[in-house]
Image (cartoon, rainbow, N blue to C red; front, side):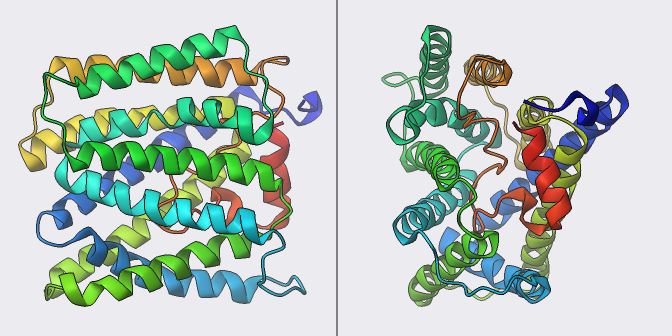
Length: 332
């Protein structure tokens, strides 16, 4: 539980929520740029260049780390599971954004808190009581409303979006299982290296020459991710996770706007109805976890990463140790 003396004030809580909203707006812009590039290039090529442009930032982080330790994982099995989840989940997110309407992709990705709750039972030993199980069932109904099996054409994009949501959930639960025993630099570096090697091995078969404008857009995608991550650090240091985490659902508004303005997308009523059901379920799970007796592990509240695309770095990984401790304390 948080010490009342260190609890956020109403002003700082409001500021934290605003920082969260701006961060998720940056992420939504990031995703719209991915969709724009996905109309011309393979997701393998897009992921490769985004990872490539991320390496200078990672290098600066590693150089600035003063910890006297090597980069070998302390828990190799869990680190490997997390790395695989990051690579597969990240690629699937990029593919889904490339082929599905933005609002539809987000609606499916928003199922991650529901999947985190389910996975936390076998992996973390979390006790999920009837209220949260009811929210899980309602959220899964929302997913079915979005997908409309039997009455709508389902393709690889829908499967990819769901796999990405599952990858996000698995990454979050494994992070909670690691419990801070693995260095943040290790958690950042290994998924980046794995993404680089996998995408590079496939790149010769899918590569299409890119003009400078598209390379600049890819660089912009990497910068947007860093900007959003920095804003999220600030958000979680100003406000409790229970207040910041729900701000992710604002992305459905940006998805509808960007989809309409840039991609001539007009999602139907059922997509937004399903998204609303999923969002309501996710919000209820967050509020139940935030309660004193709602959850032992708080796996959803501790899932500070939006999704694990570019290495799955926790958003506090670029913060100094004092900020890291503050963020972790607020999520208790």
